[in-house]
Amino acid sequence: MAFMNWDEEVTFDVSWLDEEHRALVDLLNEIHANVQAGEKNFRLHYLLDRLISCTESHFAEEERQMLRIGYPNHENHRLQHKVLLNEIRSLQTAYREDYISLSLDALTQIKSWLTNHVANMDSDLARFAKRFSELNPATDGPADL
Image 1 (tube, one colour):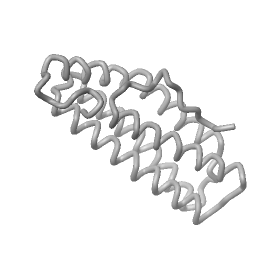
Image 2 (cartoon, helix red, strand yellow):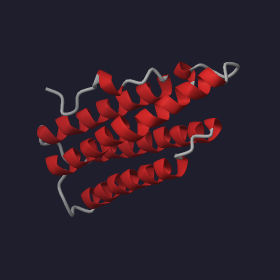
Image 3 (cartoon, helix red, strand yellow):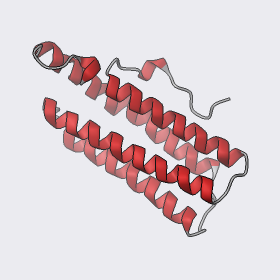
């Protein structure tokens, strides 16, 4: 059973949001499976590096799109991104320096943050992006924003 299930309720029909969220969920599930299997060191270091890289890339794309469409809650949304990235980086640093093992509690905290962020902040962004594309038909459609 997956640690985090992809839920159709957080599918927004905005391709760059949906595809990247799905990739983050898949990666979190892979990290969880490795923790459950007792994997240590290199594999988890690599997966945490990938999680940070994918999260940074996704957030950068979201922020670029928010600016492009004039999303009014951009700054608050960006600050929320910064909070999660700092949490993941702190977790990675602590794991690398052997301060902690990678625990289910730490993964559950990331899962909870991601679930809440997608369901609340990103759903608002998706609605705004769809309205933007409806009001600006000469731009890309919502699926290609």
